[in-house]
Image (cartoon, rainbow, N blue to C red):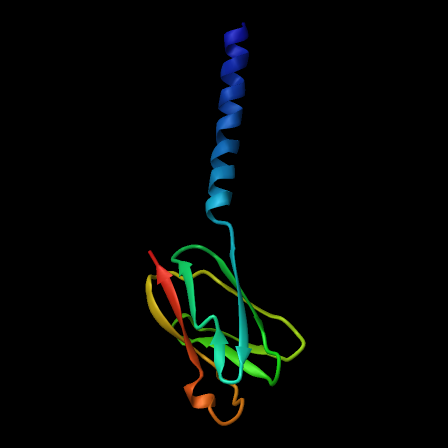
Length: 118
């Protein structure tokens, strides 16, 4: 009788343990970025393929854009507000990040790198 109760507890607990492990592996990674004239800090953002990411971007001086064209994601960044860009990179590689809102002389050279590791 006790053996049946233990078996039932194990059978009921196993799926919960699997779901907990899956949820932990899929946990969103948060990255803080500052968009200043004419640079992103940090210049290189490192993330993992298949892991959701939230990039929190602030701009202290002028309106900016933050765009990762290879993943078709972008957001406007307004001074005094935090912009959050959420997505899940689906492939590994090195991808260009650009400011796609004119922010003054030097805008053309404002870029960074999204490094997605397998």
